[in-house]
Length: 127
Image 1 (cartoon, one colour):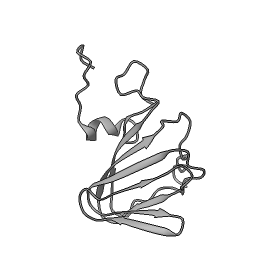
Image 2: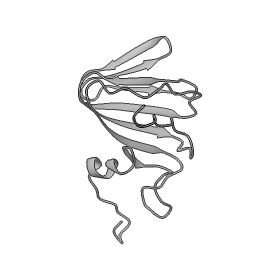
Image 3: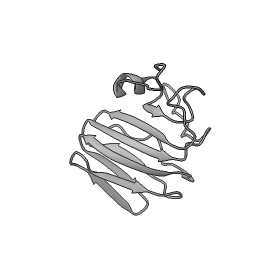
Image 4: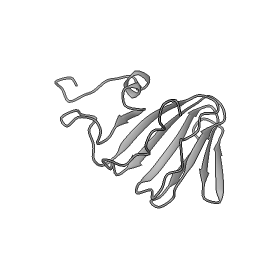
């Protein structure tokens, strides 16, 4: 962070260090990107990449915006395909989801609030 209260970065390299997250509770206290109110993710996904498993007991509201590619979100009883730059979907607390990148995709996700300890466990390596 600069001394003038600004943080200037690049989404790709900055996101690579935190599973895509640019802003949220997981950034160190004192970092301008630390927030308990909101989380922002720059997601870069290869064609065919899927979420490891569905969310369970979603506690946040979320907005996902397609930057490039083609991205499918799966909700109970409904799929939503984002196909044109700027397409987006918003879902509320209690609405579980999964997703798949139908093409190489870049998406930006905004979730609120930022809840420590809430994340889907990663799949074990080699299994």
